[in-house]
Length: 157
Picture 1 (tube, rainbow, N blue to C red):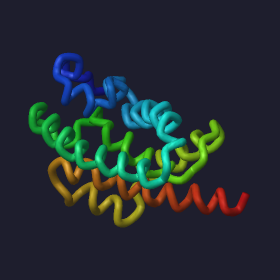
Picture 2 (cartoon, rainbow, N blue to C red):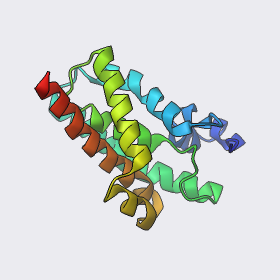
Picture 3 (cartoon, rainbow, N blue to C red):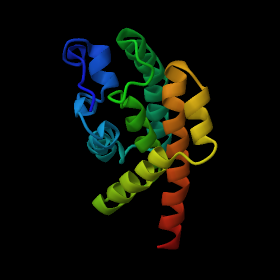
């Protein structure tokens, strides 16, 4: 178990990169980070799709910078507490999914499965792409896989 650095609570960039503190949990920070993204999805879910996707794109670009800066400041590439990438990956998973608690839960589970098991090419990207972009891209890819899975589930039901 890694303890979150004190800077999480004192530096706004670290606080955001640590998912508003949700990544400071010493065990399963990615899971708690994804849980932290759900209330924001609930708030975003009524946005027109173009606005929703634009917001996700902006949070991804900001996330590349946040994750890179925080990683550099901590001297650890992709510290487990950096969970902004989980926020963005989950929001991508839920794009064009009408809000319901059932859908939010299924999206959470499917995204976590792809994020944890990292099927090809997610695992390759996780191991070979560096910097803030590298921290973000595997979760964006997991979000795309999960998005396809959720939409298949919606189509079948």
